[in-house]
Image (cartoon, rainbow, N blue to C red; front, top):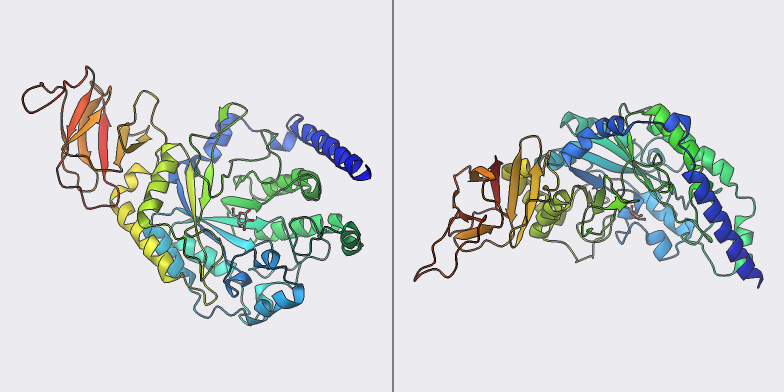
Length: 461
Ligand code: GLC
């Protein structure tokens, strides 16, 4: 009975709090839709970024949640802190690979849920400069990626399984179903002090490294034994972030989805939406984050790696629905991308070298362009070009339903060779059908072009 009451009260409080958040836009957050669009213009154009999950969890090499999954105590987890020494770390190599793969921005974990900090934070001792490696990892990374023309984003975990003031909750490694145990563990833990810690750390991150283009805060799980915007102090946090970096783009994991001002884009994770995601009936900017193999941190024995083909299709599909792809690499404890990651990045580079025009500056095609069989469409509204990504190369004819009068010129994107097209076929002894009125047939070569996914570039009328 008591539990039920507690549950109901929490539910009501959560509901009330979410309504509170929905109240009018605070003065500091007022922005016209046009101004927001301009702030997001680089991101909407660039479409493709590299996520990097790196930390002391690269040593156990069995998921970045290993501390929680295996309920490791601080003492056991400390082993990895004491052994962290990525002697082969060279962020210039990482940046070169990202650039070759066509990635235009990077988002790197500055602190993950385990609380370990990859920079020399003044707010804690639990940081890389106190490991055997002894040096800041973030500054050289920022410099190396910027030198390749890649924009910088920081991932910062709201969750912290190391901080003594972070109350143990249902996601915490020390979580227990025994309420008394939790009460004992949480005695003296002070969320207000932890909020101050987050503010101090974000102040460092957003003032020491020049312009930061994206901030990926992770994540909220409001409700019973969880944490949401009330616990994080999300509104204050966001106000601080916007003050320090007015142009920055912030994800939607602060638990402010009820507002129009508390997030810049939504973040479907390891999930491909069926169509352009909407919120309150409006299409919204979105960035899907995806892994090569399932975990984010380096996982030696994970074998569910996606093929290059799957990844190329994932990128195309994301853009075909108006989104961005943030594709993750989990470097090893020595500081390298492992051979499986390199193979994928090289594959993406091979495709992007010839086909990036169908990604950058592109979005979903207007609704009056029907998707041909086994194809995905992207569209560049400025250049007025349509890109047909042919997933299965058909024999000789690619039928474009309703495209009559819309095409000026067509070519294969990988080699710029002309694709001729016809409006009609005459049924005869060798053909079976009339091309329906309004349709176009592209006369494609019999041999499939030698790229992961061939693209046909259509110059529209
Ligand atoms: C999740 C996971 C995490 C990962 C993140 C990436 O919320 O907790 O391990 O960092 O998603 O988006």
